[in-house]
Image 1 (tube, rainbow, N blue to C red):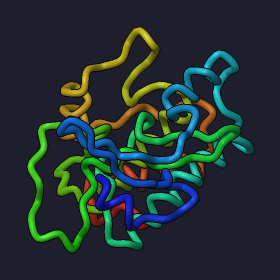
Image 2: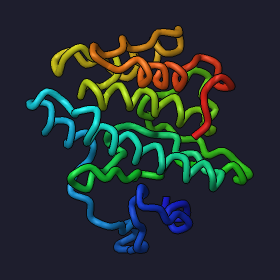
Image 3: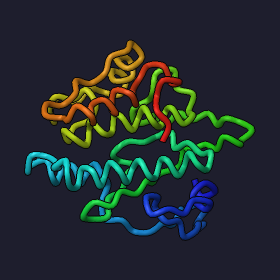
Image 4: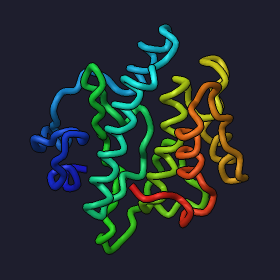
Length: 199
């Protein structure tokens, strides 16, 4: 993670300061950002969610710009989800947690048992996977709920989400989502990775 972060400098990526080693433990030191997008969505949920022409657009655009920068550096994040996006109020999004990220120039794929946010069907951990996850994040950002959840009390476990996605299912688009935004979401989560847009 430190190796990746040290090479990335962008307003929508958490700033890396260095690494501290203590008692055989390694700690990655980054800038302090008050909260995750998950926490941010919890805070705004009581108010009916985020308005389209304000914080929603700022947060959605910030994540997209961060992902686009990563891809321009031939790096895929591979775990885009609300808990891996930090929010510097009022609405500056910063990507964090690059533990699963991979450069296209890397010679070997690292096997990892850590679960990813919203894995794409046939995921090869390349940039189309990030685009798929971004589409899912846009839906979560709109309705302040995880993918396929209908309420805070009805959140499906990760293996159920993975099974649904692998079978071609997608979350129901939230009521009131503008058609142009919904079209972007649908393009992002296309079953065929080659059909997804670039960022």
